[in-house]
Image (tube, rainbow, N blue to C red; front, side, top):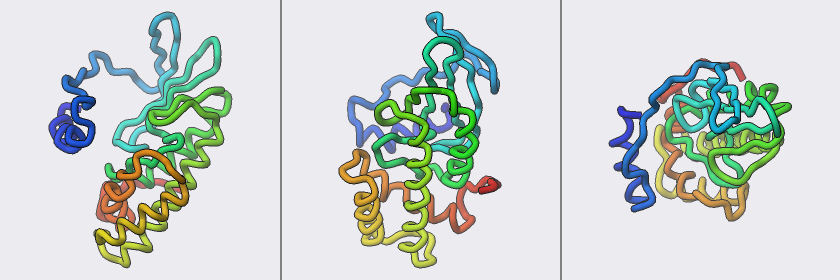
Length: 193
């Protein structure tokens, strides 16, 4: 977080203005994979998913007792366009598959963006990422960047896929990172899909 705070502030403060986090709070304790943590009497089991989603570090927090629920962070975006500019779309697709069995009994899922959802939203996210990647590959024409007109076409295509969804600006914003990743020149991790 310390390494990316200035970069993220420069990128997002102009977009979100005063709503952007003014003072970041850094973790004061690291939690290991499958460790339990308790807050206000609720016990969570933390599952480290690693890179994939919209960053290099993703985790799922599953409530251990009581109503079955999981907090999935940016594993899926429910009803919004996804940010994929960090270059981990292939690992994200692998994480969606890996999370399916982990979340099978979780009940209600709380994503990082959008309203609560059920397990079927993982498949919707997967379909979105596959459609996005296919469109980016086609519109790049073999180049490592999309032209502005290709980005506009990409936004139009993804708009028909997710009609009226918020965060549309992320579609074009993420395109070149995905082009680079698919061409093997971005942050690519070995994944088995």
